[in-house]
Image 1 (tube, helix red, strand yellow):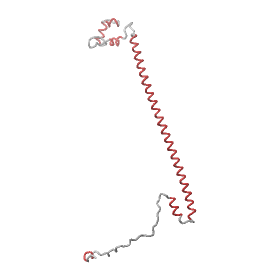
Image 2 (tube, rainbow, N blue to C red; image 1 turned 30 degrees about the vertical axis):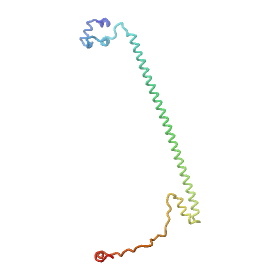
Image 3 (cartoon, one colour; image 1 turned 180 degrees about the vertical axis):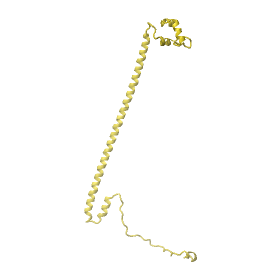
Image 4 (cartoon, helix red, strand yellow; image 1 turned 45 degrees about the vertical axis):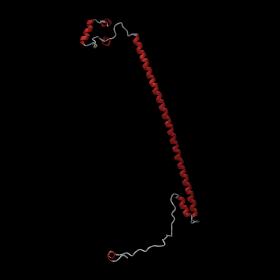
Length: 179
């Protein structure tokens, strides 16, 4: 058995380990190297091969480079998302500023309209005493949205109106002929 030479254990020790359950056999009845390494550790005087170390280093470097690539991609994606968010914020701030200016302009416009209406009312009030027609003009200027109400003093009457028949009582409706 090569295991006894490699691990410098007697065959009896190995068989006892199998019997006690410390070691186990494969389905083909042989002892796997990983089982021997698990129980006895690295063989005496045998170091791990440089080939194994090189493969492990290559795998480590390959995995590290893949991780770096993935992280760089994620950083790039996050930077793009941040740029888009900053653009959206800038656009929304500009929109808010535009709306604020509109509201301020509307307020000053309404204020100037009120001042104009007050001036017109003052000039109308000063003219009412001298001109009787100005009162209707003042009403139309102060409330331009309300329609002007004109009183019509003449009521037209149709030329031919049929007279109403005289009213009849309850019993006369049944006993007297239609008139």
